Length: 281
Image (cartoon, rainbow, N blue to C red; front, side, top):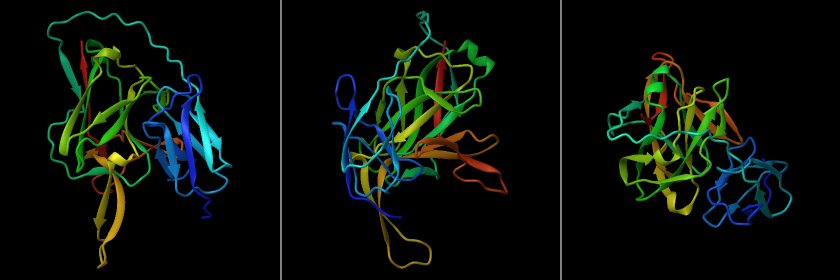
């Protein structure tokens, strides 16, 4: 593959000219990408020619941009969200139900990031019983990290009529800091007053390609004597083997695809991301 020179840029709000942190910036249809930092800056060491950038950020319209300069300024248009009116009634002891409950921190399968800002998502199908527990109260995620306070982003996405990821439901980043080791992060969504949509929803976990998340990973391939060195980004997301309908999806290069991550022909298992959704009255 022919490679162009280094590319630097900044992602800004077109209306306020303020920097947009944690934007997902990828080379379309490739496994090359990065994340803007807290000041909106990003950098590519190498960029293939004749490719477009795909810029995705919560709260803004996705933009596709052909690159011809080594320094670019990207202006994103804020997105308007229409949220239905919700009547909130105080409940002293709201009854809760859990979907895809995480029952243990012990896990042997993890999704990892080697420098590409991809997203892994789990689909949550609507069931009639949720009518009694319509509000999305919490999201819980099982992670593993060797870095204290590694960060990731949560996106809550609606499903279209085909059961595919569609539009953002929450118009802002939900940045989560994890603890070192195996940890369950609990995110309180009560203030958003979200009702579980009848088309279902996706909870997407987005790796952030930022210095605070970076670490060196050394490993050996079978049959090799020399160690290999790789830069990775924490945290790692736990996933448990599961049978049945595949509920996992991946975002990369500007598009969503359904993914099994691991498909055993004999057991017909796939890896189900350890994401739990808590509903309440």
